[in-house]
Length: 201
Image (cartoon, rainbow, N blue to C red; front, side, top):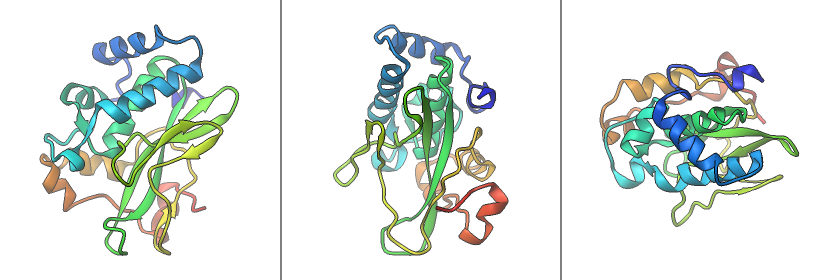
């Protein structure tokens, strides 16, 4: 589990602001599951999704997401992982491949998290932020993610990675504004998924 607790340049779990928020959340709860739920709900509800709110800048590093209070789904998953790891709760990264407009091509990756809960094992949660047609919740052992697979070219990758995909990090780091990234969202084709260590369900 060490790799799912690690501090990295992107998942900077030891940053003072991350530690302060993680400690504040932990002080209000008595179990790791309660801490995990509270952390998830905080990121889901308090960090504004860059596209939904048309907010800049594009963030990537967990502490930057917290500082600017905005991020795409990927960035929000980076912050949630950092908060969980700061409280010694293992957290990983999951991805789906989804139609951008629910009509087919073009497709894009969608990022969220898996949390290791003592009584459940790995449990996937999606903190991208709820809206009219999105209602992601923390209801273990049942998953309640933001999106479901609808098209043949979509995929729900079952792999739980200990680090964010490089293609995702590069997309976030190479674009400054939310609308610029919107035109350059990261994608992994089904044919190349294995090259990224992603298993198709």
